[in-house]
Structures are given as structure tokens and as C-alpha cells.
Length: 152
Image (cartoon, rainbow, N blue to C red; front, top):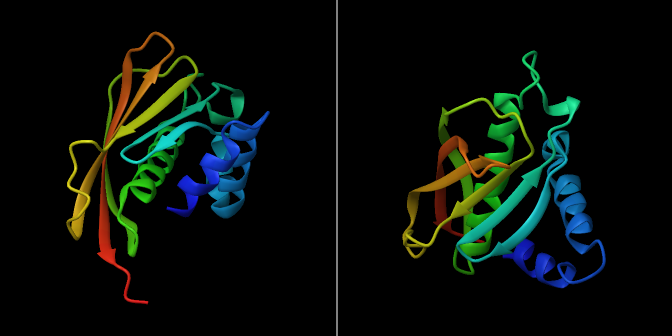
């Protein structure tokens, strides 16, 4: 929920989304390897984009599979954080991915949690789809998030 409150403060400022994305990468530094832009964040929904640049490419000059995994974990985690009730916490417990086609362009990851019951505890499967600039799905992830009431 803290990420959502911060995003809401930044989103309408000039370069606010870039500043928010930078702050997220400072909190979880590994995400900075893909230089993400968090474009939209609200309960049950997030949209994250990356540019296809050399730093995220593989030997085939397409976006590297692990860069897409990183993008999916960022999207799924932010959406989960924005969706769980106050007093709950979460941690990723696993991820199953499908590489559907070569990622030859900039990418957008969307995690839509509107079909998830956010009041339940335990393992919740969070879907993330990544599409290219033609709107074609290049990657899908199902991320298992372990959600619990915070005991603190």
C-alpha cells in the first residue's frame, strides 16, 4: 500500500512517473537493470514498460528472457502490494513463465488482479502478460504470491 500512496503523490507531477520508478529501483536495486517505467498503478492493476536497449538484449538482439522475468516480478509485486488489504504482507513464492515469441521491440507488462480474491491468505497466483509494440503477447507469467496477515 505504501507504493500506491507514493505513486498517487508522484503521478501527476512533471516526470513524476520517472521519479517514482527511480525510487522503486532504489528500494529494490535489481529492478534498475531493466530501467522500468511504472506507467499506471492502482489496486488490482499495474502497467510497466521498458525500452529495448542493448542492456536488456541477448545474443539474438531480442529482449532477454530474464529481463522479462524481472519485469514480470516488478509488475506482479507492485500490483499485489497495491491490492492486498491493510495489515497484510506478501512475498513471491514461485513463478512459472512462458516465452511465447521473440521480443523485438519495447515492451509493456500488465498485471490485472481483478479476478483475484484479495481477502484470502496463502498462495495467490498473480498473472502478468508482456506485449510488444504491436500488441502481441511475447511472454506470460503466473507468479505465486504468499499473502498473510502481518503479525506485527
